Image (tube, each protein chain N blue to C red):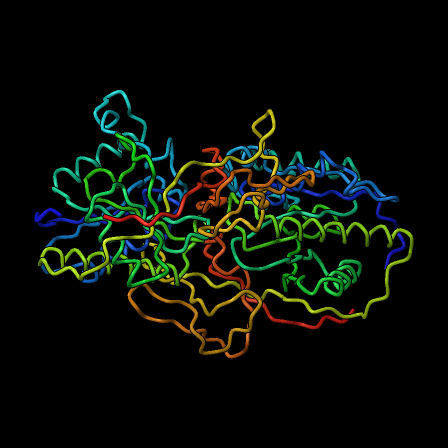
Length: 290
Length: 290
């Protein structure tokens, strides 16, 4: 583990303009900054998609959180609203020499308190272990094949994560999940403060991680029209067994999960993912040793 | 009660384009019409806000379900997308000589299966009594002062109601509530069939109705910015007692309900109502004798 200090943390809300939890947390932190102040590093707050926040919509032209690939940030021909905003945000993160990013999201699926790690960096895994130990409601999600050049805001620096809380409808604030998210952020900042003092608590060198192995789209007809709903038995982070109901078709048919091993679905029925052709993300539950 | 037969029923979905339950029920009924066919009347299906459905947004220019006042329908100067669409729908309902309207909605608040009556018409009250008797999950909501010239689609004919189901996030399909809504529609059609045969079941001449007496906005600052979230103790259709917590302010303050009688809030935290300055609707629980 690097001995390098973390000198600046950025907390971002409203990367998607209809995810109010992050937006109102940022507004709160901006007004009452002592909540996020720590003794040995600075924390800056940032609202992501300003136009979409005003319109209470996910995005205006394209999804901002798919605009952060380095070649796209350097491409002067990409100039719709989100492409320009991504460049502004990347420049700010670079200029401010941010070492750690916390990007705040919410989901309509029942994922509780999830942290999404952007890499296998040992500091992130240690932090994740700590967070799951002090709060058993916290789940850790990771993409199996870390893309070489990921499009997410949280990847603007090597140490980054997204917090994904749900179930929260778009355009809605839920007080309990708001407070739980606030505490989770506080726990992360506390841990960074201890790290800078070289006093992080001892934790076992392993962590339970849900690793994405693929996605599953809704059954659709030739016109791309959805033909089924997700079966109520399919529950975020619960094992889905081969042969279990997966989709209830409008015509009464039931499709079952046809894989041959247990999977753990997440982002089940997320509203914003219908257009991305994702009914759910499929993960495997791993014990990661590091 | 009138002896007049009900000859044509219209079921409308997608009056709001991001309320998928109604939209996909209409698509299902259009493909598999036998579910809504009955022996002694016709049923037509209709999608409301076609542009908004395509965009999965509540509306394009203005809320379609506030465009049905008779003077607005007759005003040729009102010609944004929803104002034109309202005129088309009104014309269709008129040309088809529709006697009964069922307008399908969903809400992000936890209102279960609610029917909203558009008047005190004895047939509507009798139907509502029947529906609550065969399914105790059904709640009946009514506006205290029935406006002289209401702006809602369901008011295009004297017999009309809205079905409001939740909690469902915008842009999401929930299989269980979808099926419960389908059964509720079927029960209404069955009742109309019996009515046309003069064979409606005997029910007591009274019904529990939640009657709206007002609305409550979020606490806001001088810039109209929301300053608080709804307290988790405030629950749809549950009694709210004077002095109970109502709003949790971002600065830690708690506001309590300051009225002097028990109220029953509904539409708590509905996403689409933040812009309408409604945090919740306030109702009184009544036993209506008719």
